[in-house]
Image 1 (cartoon, rainbow, N blue to C red):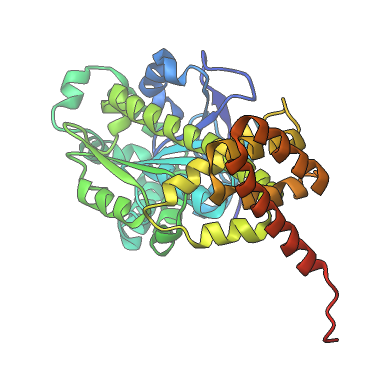
Image 2: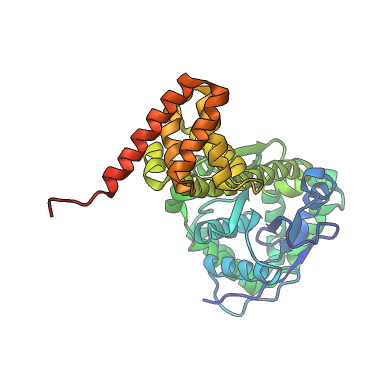
Length: 403
């Protein structure tokens, strides 16, 4: 097999800053990256996606990409796409693909989940058609060229009446471009589809996924796309009325809207995950692994949202702020807990204060000072809790006399 050399280009008018999110767009077999022109124009006009870098990549022997010199597999094509992304700056990226492009996008998500931040599969699947069907298609193109596919492709790609309404527009130009595709490269891509099946991997896919289908698509039907979404945890499926296999060309504004929503949601989720992960690091540093592990082990479906809220807000935000040291935050926390009468939290934060570097005398001084404003009963309770925590520490530090 051969990892081909692919070429891509940033869509004009999209954000050039390498720090901005990257969206990679992949076309279908027999089409060029211009298939996405209408979607790109709509994304450029949408304030939600104004910060996106949009990278479109052509398939082997299609558009700007050179012909592939030998047999190629879907994993080879995925690695070739990844190479273009790395040349463009690397890092994580969102990816959307149509038909074969969607298959390549899925392979990227399965093989490189650490890189793919969200996945959009338009009129595609974990397996498309039959091996014999793709083998026959490859043989036809080798014998008669891609020109022999134009009539059949017109029927497969577009909804009834679309080309009449299109009248020399992007649909007609897409069919014209099919004739210019390198025959051998087309055939090798078709054979790659014949060998591809990622159905068994869908259940373990953790990448946010959107499946888009066209009402009239007889290749990757709305039913098959719904099945795809059902097999991927958390995925959703949207069927577009009045569209067929090239739904992204027929309904670019709607597809752009769906992509904007999907990418935006994935970006927000990723940002929240970063805050959560940092919050968990701070939480463990302050409270200790044993305490946090017990809290996590005791989480139920009803308390999971609260645990996430506490980790992100208390520990990922407030405790992580640079304005006070952790010693100072322990002092403020102990004073607040004692004043509020929150005795069930005091022991935990006495332990945290020791971990944050306060001495026993300093903790006692904090509680004494707070007694002046919170009252003697609150001080009595807090000091008793403090004494118990210190006793626990002494017992834990005592030598084992049974050795």
